Length: 305
Image 1: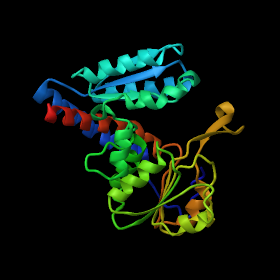
Image 2 (image 1 turned 45 degrees about the vertical axis):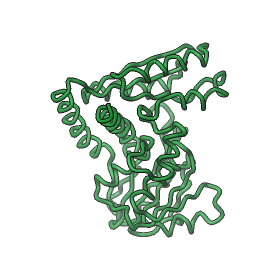
Image 3 (image 1 turned 135 degrees about the vertical axis):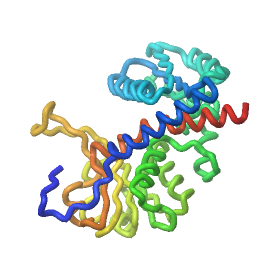
Image 4 (image 1 turned 180 degrees about the horizontal axis):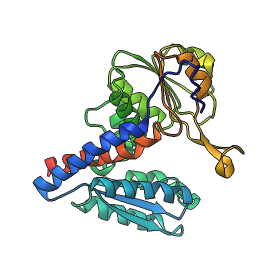
């Protein structure tokens, strides 16, 4: 990323800055919960196997929990675990009144592929802080109040709010249709009052779909998909892409690439536009949003108890 001074660069929507401020808010909220109830939000993380990427993601969640004063329990099954054993553990966690959120770290091993949907749907909806059970998906798809949105979608919403970028009444195009990011992001924007268009990398006239938007959110997983042709001056561009690509010019020979050609797109957006960097943008918000979901789950369970 080359922030050359002669280019009319847009405002950078830095997820690190937003996360630092919102993290302080979470620390305060959890301290207040401890003071008034003696209880703090607790998250169960179910992992199957020992994939290095999953281990890294889980490590980040555990560290963040410690930093804000939340609790976590990491359950790490071997790859040979049966689906029945996972169901039994989820049932136990569902019944545990001191456990407020449950996530199943994806992807699961190939041997559990056929059982994946049943495993995900075994989580009690009240504790589904990933927002991925069928019941949760139905709730956020329909824009129901109190729906638990997947963390990346909520993180995008929080990032826009932090930088005072309104969504209501705006045209939003979301490129990507995954249940993890694209669909819930479209749903959360629609619930906020936006006019939403959902596209994908194979959309017949992708340029028209993206260029007409006030806010463009790209979660296609295709590095460099969005070029200057896809954007206009003054637009807000949110890049969710995080694809590892080879690059001999950086230590380790690889870097994380977004879906947006950052430098060239930024030159078109100009000083009236805004854009997220990769890394340092949306990714910073995802774990924070997960724990915002966990705190919401704590409230919901204590209020209904």
